[in-house]
Image 1 (tube, one colour):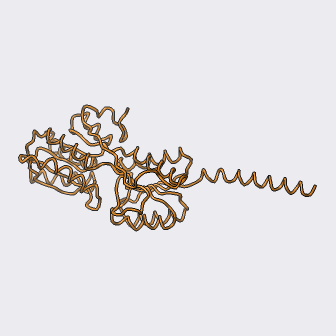
Image 2 (cartoon, helix red, strand yellow):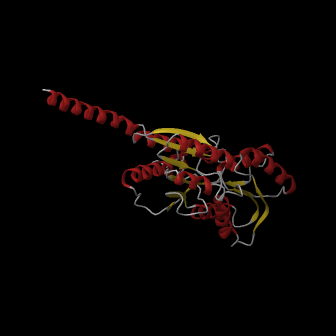
Image 3 (cartoon, one colour):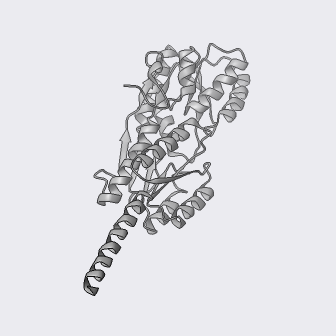
Length: 313
């Protein structure tokens, strides 16, 4: 009888252990870190990653580093302390982020990067980025066509520390510079900021009242430029952006902005979570570290199908 009771107790203990283990797996934590959610692109990333992670049974913590590498480092420390299983990261600088991602790796936490690359390989498990060069050439081709292949124009660029800013500018110029009658009269960084773009566009307009077009490194800067142009009564200036935001979609539909380039932020973030889930379960993503997603030109012909950085099927 004593042996029977012992075996029964062991069986119950084993069952209890299984019952306890099952919910524990559902509580595995994925930490999602992006730039400021004031920018709808980064909010879409965070929302997409959070939705997919929770759909797959993970808990999530969502943070913003505000493009501050020191704050990002503190958030990585917090993720390590919290015992995160994986980190989804849109980083705060191609060089400045390498050490933080390495620190997470050394702590046994894999990182899955979205939108922005870092200047190192073998540190993150995956780096999923939009094909910024391909997208920039699409935007530049639309810009040149709308400009009639001639005229003075302005370029607003993103943060110098962001690899994407340079890639997009290169893509723009590899197309535009083929047209000798297209003349860039000003090129300034507005650091991805709508407010800064507004201020700089005001100054540029005063010095160059004869501009015909503005091409911006992202939609937030395009909207800032548009606001400055409208304040100056310059509704004739052609504006092209990059990202595929709802704000620019609405401006395209209203005839105020000519075009933008969609990079699929929501889907990109979800794919990162799917790869994290596969990696945690199987030890491999089955993909190369560097993954590129093509962009799509958005203009009056398809803007009506755009919603939150995704085109309807």
